Image (cartoon, rainbow, N blue to C red; front, top):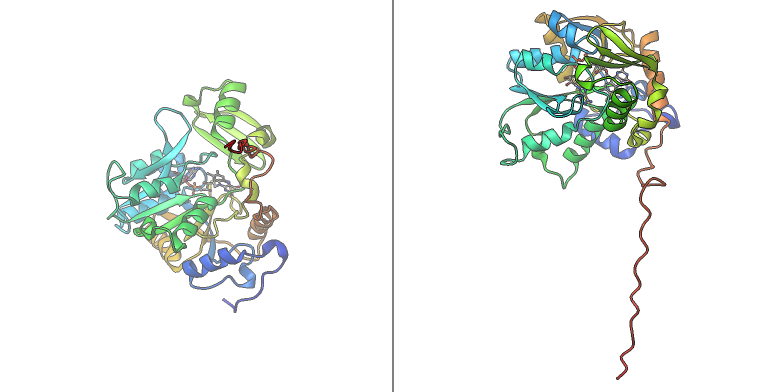
Length: 334
Ligand SMILES: Cc1cc2nc3c(=O)[nH]c(=O)nc-3n(C[C@H](O)[C@H](O)[C@H](O)COP(=O)(O)OP(=O)(O)OC[C@H]3O[C@@H](n4cnc5c(N)ncnc54)[C@H](O)[C@@H]3O)c2cc1C
């Protein structure tokens, strides 16, 4: 890697606070070549070898296979994944996976946020969680915003560092946006389209299309614009597409159908990926950093960087600030 260079353009500039966090995580700033994708070591197309993982995964099953490798080689004691709440189908919630079966049960993507950092807090704070996992080692899968939030809390002087004390590595998912659970799944998929959420087996957003499966049947195949009203407003200020603060970032863009694109960002992430390949959990092809696939990924990252991260202040949708009630102070008559 070359020396630190200024970012290539205004849209690729990293805010100073993020650059500082990156320095803490990676031990260096990004180079000019990494201005768009963020700090990384390698880029790969990856597919799980376990047929049950492949059958249940969103893309190539890279995330579940990497976690399975880490569990079975005792690199971690458990993985914090995103599963479903028992009462509301397709409503994500953080879940602990300690076995292959639990990883398979929680594979696949939910396009509404599940609150992985809340799960970390439950684990980290003694006596608050039902079961106290705090002395065990874990990995976490999360969205770019969740990892951004996690590292902002973890590197801030006032935050509790124990939130990440036993976190061995993180896996981040590429993400352009998430949707509101009620508006997307309940009101649209169930309400407007009349699909019982209990029968949905897979939700995918690919090439700007919303794809919803019930068993092997493709029940919805429509332009994703039908969900425009359900997109979460918070995503308008997020500029991180490729999970820039993860040890290992994973997505679909850049790979053939049925494969996952993987960016290793830390030496630990690279070791875990190589270990999983050498131990037969994954097959892997190297992606050419100057090739079409990575260039397309960079285009999507650049597009997301055009959003405005400075707009943290609430605007028109926020409640108007109430006018104060003016008390009439009467002057004492005597
Ligand atoms: C909201 C969202 C938006 C996405 N947008 C893009 C995109 O624009 N471009 C792109 O290339 N890829 C995107 N992805 C990533 C893609 O859908 C796959 O998750 C990724 O390719 C990994 O596939 P896999 O087969 O390797 O993972 P799997 O082996 O299927 O494992 C996926 C893991 O992700 C966890 N997970 C599922 N949903 C969530 C969630 N909401 N929050 C946190 N963890 C979760 C699961 O628990 C599981 O452990 C998005 C994912 C999500 C959840």
